[in-house]
Structures are given as structure tokens and as C-alpha cells.
Image (cartoon, rainbow, N blue to C red; front, side, top):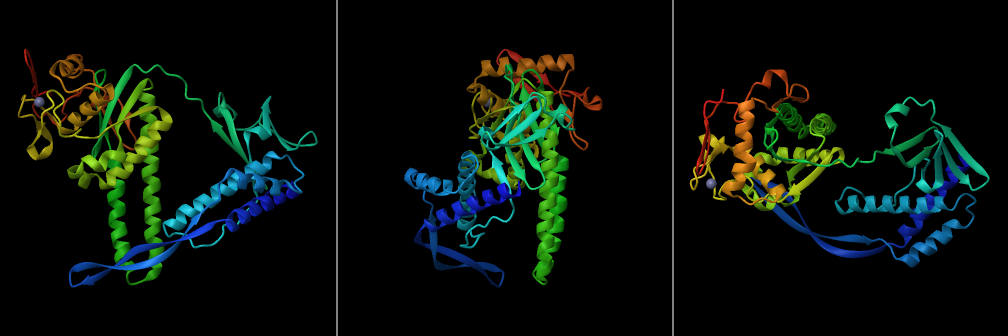
Length: 432
Ligand SMILES: [Zn+2]
């Protein structure tokens, strides 16, 4: 085993060496700046630097000759050479990404630990046993999983790539995403302290995000305190980064719990979210409030897509368009409620965002008849049945929590909400 691990480490390093030696460096002039304080003003000072930008050899001929070179004196299965090549490229690419950002120096990556990436072609999994080919028809490595503690958790999963180390084997698993027939659509809108969803079946779904907001607030205060000390003592820098890591971990943990519960609560749903990549383009005014939230939002969408089906919609005007007539909405009462001057629709601002995402993901344009059919009628029916899918979070999220169950889907604060539509005047006033 030791010999095998060492030889793999050697060809991996050799591959990196050869790729490194064949990198073409081009000179690029770049403008950088530093900030100078002048009284109260901060002034940017620009200067030019010349940077060497690497171009990594990727041609098929190069890869083939590199592979042949590595295969010389290689006495194990030849697939390991391919695995080493792939790993070498991914290491060089990751170094390059960081180098371009200025986080790495122009120094060749070196392999420090021994490990082998075992591709799926290099092992079989039968009768609870993993059999890794080291040398075809000669040398195999076998792992018995029949008594493994995690056996029940991996039932029905496929095995992915393995990573072999000196003292352990890391096994990756893939769970096939079962084909669920999606019958429900839920549109989601993120706000500073809540995640608001809408679907005709569940009405207004509110998820409390105050805890997530709180995590960031607490750390913001700590960070500021640490930062003011940093300028005096350089050793405090580690404290600053520690706060950042802890904050990130806590937020991630919260989001993992949140998305798991959401995907369990609505297993058949297709979840609609605003496409964040495009968000900056349209929602300038909203951006301010969303700076911290934006990072969370990205993580929420990312984690949701692991756990259930997600559809991204264009975020253009989702907060400012009237879902009924397509007119421009006015903010009322400190922005909590919006109203349409054209058709008179008055709605909670956050619910309105969720409704707009819902309509967009269904491909519905703003229209009174669609709005009646998919929004106001279902909501009125829900209200009658007093059935709601309100969610409140303590440490995580509870769906249909007992205490909130008797609340109505529209505006928990008891603000008047009027949904009027030609011929069907609906008033949800004093809903408590
Ligand atoms: Zn309108």
C-alpha cells in the first residue's frame, strides 16, 4: 500500500511539474489602487503594475504526450494515470483562480499528503464489498461494508469516487433524485427577516428568518470591535477571520436545517426563486437592504437545489409590479403594504413579491382573470377553511406549528388587506 500511495503521489507531482513547465506567461498591465485618507475624505490612488498571466496547456496532443510520459514505469492499473492527470489539472486550475485574485504567489503547487483518487472504473461494489483494482488481475484491495455503521443510511445510494489515504478510505455517495411528479408550484421571495412563499394550495407561507439575521448582527458587532483593535495590533487579525468563519458556519447550519425542512414539507413542489445573477441589474433600490441577505439567499437557493427541484425566474420588477394589472405599485405604511394606483389592489409587500415569483414561474402575465383564479380565489377558500401553512422558527422552522395554525394566510399583523377584482369584491379586513 505504501508503495502504491507513494508512486501515485510521484506521478501526480510529475504531472503538475510538466504542466507547470509548459505554462505560457503573458504580461498584462493592470491598474490597482490604494486608499488614502485626506481629512474625512477617502481618496483612491491609482498605480499600474505588470502582471504575469498564465496560460495552461490544454491541447489534446499535450495531454496525450503527458499521459504517455506518466505511463512509463507505471506498474499499476493505467486508469490511475488518468485520475492523476485530472487531479493535477484541477489543482493547477484552482491555483490559477487564486493567483489571478492575488491570493497565491507564482509558485508551483506541491503535493504534501499521500492520497489516491479512485475513479468509478477502478472499483466494483458487490455484496456490500468494495473491491479496488490496484494491478489488474493481480492485486486488489477489498473493503467490507456489511457491518459498517452507516449501512442503513446509504441504502439505495450509488457510490461515487473514492479517495484512498494512508489510514482511511473516503467514500462518496450519490442519492438518485427520485422522479417526483411536481403538481405544486411555490414562488419564494426573500426579505431581511422572513422568507415568503406563495402557492394556491398553501396560500402565504412565512418562514421566520430573524435568527439568521440575528447571527449576522451579532457577528457584525463583534467584527467591528475586533477591527477597531486590528489597526493597533496586527495579532487581532486572526480574531477577525475567526469571527467570519464562525458566522458563516452558523448561517450555513441554519440554512441547511431550513432547506431540509422546506423540502420535506413540500416534497412534490417545484420551488421558484429569483435568479440572483441577474438581480443586480434590475433591483437597484432593493439592493441596499439585501447586501447581507444576498449571500444567504444564494446559499438558500443552492441548498434547495440539492434537496428538491428549483426553478429560477427573472427578478425584473418582481417587487414593483402589480400582479393583477401589471401596473406600478406604490409603497404604503412604511413600505410594509403596497398598493396599485391603477386597479386599487392592496397587498402586503412581501406576499406580493412571492405572488409575482409564483406567476412568473408559471409563465402567467399579470391579468385580472389569472389573478382571481390563482391568487384571490384560493386565498379566500383557504381563509374559509382556516387552514394555513404558516411557519414559525425557533431554532429551525416548524411547519404548521400549533400556535400559528389558527392564523390566517394573509397578513399576520392584522393589517387590512383588500383584494378587489371586477365583479368579485373580496375584502380580507380584520382577518383575526
Ligand atoms: Zn394593479
